[in-house]
Image (cartoon, rainbow, N blue to C red; front, top):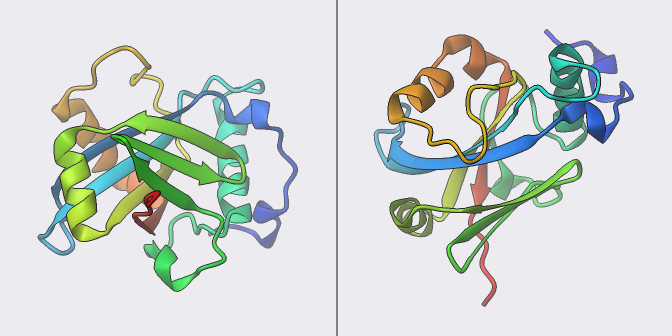
Length: 166
């Protein structure tokens, strides 16, 4: 359980460390439907170490209106939620108050995201130093991280409507 102070605790962007996006598509265990997923995680290389980075991420997510460990929030039901996903020219652009990143998405991910009209965002508070930029992440490694009950419990989950320019 998080204390009421968690969303107001001070943090610096440097504590978050390197923030990474990775996307995949597959069957959603809850619905059985094809779903586009977008994972946000830190390498744990923040200025004050991985533990401070984890707390900073919890604080940042709370300030963004996302609930760590709660049920999946549907952003289409919360128009003022400052969590936005834009899909354009094969890129997913994710914007939160503490984070702005662009990711080149696989064609199958893009097809599912457009077809479903939403993407399941998973915002991990736990660092994942094994998945570094420039190195391939195997399906097995990705599955072991995102299906770990502790990672699921300590992450925020949000269904984000797909927005496009035009």
